View 1 (cartoon, rainbow, N blue to C red):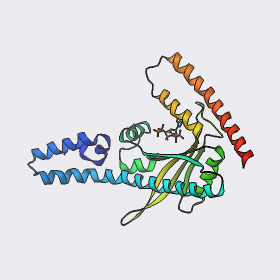
View 2 (view 1 turned 45 degrees about the horizontal axis):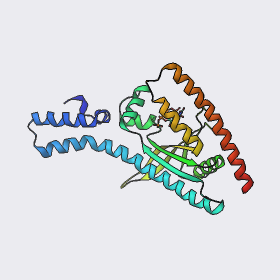
View 3 (view 1 turned 45 degrees about the vertical axis):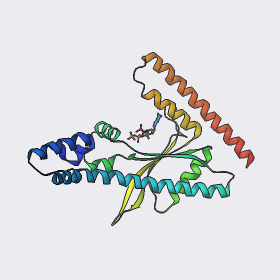
Length: 240
Ligand code: 0O2
């Protein structure tokens, strides 16, 4: 049987591999039911794999929604402006597998890629980011794997956010699993900046000189936006 019929093959090009499998089994004179069973057998582990991350996202989103409600009773207003979540798509996972020279197995991907599930929490004020992160990490079912503070230590690009890699339990039909989630906490200003800079990153057709000018402009914008966050925080502190 073709090597592409493994679950790893499905990870790369699921539709193409499924078609290949159908053609192959037709040659062996399987009936339609057998073909569908075979395809299902190959796809199921991949679907389960991604479903776990969707469940973990739900858990983490709920935790933040609860904290948002709680905080609104203590402080004036909700600390969270919005939450954006996503499960990383096939293409991005495979690109990362290649970049990190990982084996193309679900086990290796699960072990080494930490941002398959991503939850981005957008706050108005910087202090709320740390308050929310601390409350999340105090919960006894949340395990902190790593913490990167790009607010205190911005990237050379000007990127600022607080990143947490955590593991949370999900409860399935017959088992409990621990699933990793990347949480990015940032202010509205940090998010606005990151969205624009992300667009520049994927603009491949710019002349190098223009790219350099725009990158420097974005570094300046990041500094201006950090100053704005600090001023807004200070006004808010005076109102509390
Ligand atoms: P996407 O589509 O946003 O998910 P690794 O995750 O292994 O590649 P590392 O060092 O753990 O490497 O990751 P890092 O740099 O701490 O965080 C990666 C994610 O943070 C990125 O995800 C972005 O979402 C965001 N990020 C980090 N640096 C920048 C930056 O300079 N500009 C912008 N706009 N976002 C940044 P991905 O995987 O790039 O993609």
